[in-house]
Image (cartoon, protein in one colour):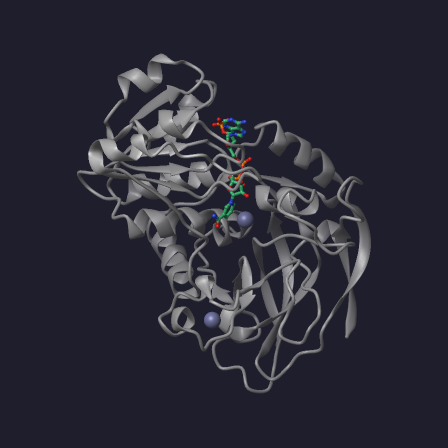
Length: 347
Ligand code: NAP
Ligand code: ZN
Ligand code: ZN
């Protein structure tokens, strides 16, 4: 074991503080990554505040990690010292279940090993990317193309893949009308990726305050959800709705926006249930679905797709001392559009 600098939550109610955490010594299939940037996902906030249930404290979160590989285990073949590397929301899985064997390890039937607050294969609690170094099994490490700006690459490891995966699965593309609900970290990536896939994209945001940005990201239409007329004007319109909202939404209103055989996919993960009136599904044979991150292969595909098309998140780089303020701004929907911690400020 070795000790590294980190930021951790002491409890669900206290601010995050600077501290140190332990990393395991490199196993034969592990790589050591010197972290350069770590994105702040709303899931980090849900987790440390106990929204989704109890977690072990002190806890270091962060699952949008990029850096350089500085050491590799004896049997590592997929990565080399000096490579630009990324780590997302999971760091291992059982590799034997039906879902793992079919390349859907994010849906591992024994539960994938989450990057933080998970129990690793060696029995220790995993600690995330708000730290200077991380040790990860080589199979769960991504190659980050050199053409993606370093700091912008970090949010792709969660916000990027979590939106790319359902857009690809439900065939966003030419001729498809896609709506994105919530223009935050996930939402702005959903707009960029869906537009790059060729879909006609509409943003559904609480107000019109970010309209210019939404159109610049590739949306053709932009509507305020605080305006009840929006739900009349857009009735029966969309093939696919990607809901990225971190709080509950009124399901009947949003389902009513789907056209025949349309699907509303929630990636937003509010702590409360989202009650679905079944009659809202009967009309237009609508579906309500969920989606969780993406597989490692699909994450690599997303990174390469974004690199080829010059797509990257819009980020606000902050120092370690600004993390608690950034949390408050995310909670107030005042994020443009992802906070990324400069890990050099932790050394
Ligand atoms: P975020 O940056 O805070 O974006 C969420 C957006 O939702 C806000 O910017 C805001 O957009 C809108 N919003 C927030 N509160 C709202 C409310 N009360 N009513 C209506 N709209 C509201 O968060 P994020 O990092 O993108 O994450 C979004 C959600 O996805 C979180 O719940 C997170 O845990 C979840 N998530 C899930 C997965 C997965 O695998 N399924 C992966 C990552 C994250 P406007 O200002 O435009 O309205
Ligand atoms: Zn996340
Ligand atoms: Zn499995």
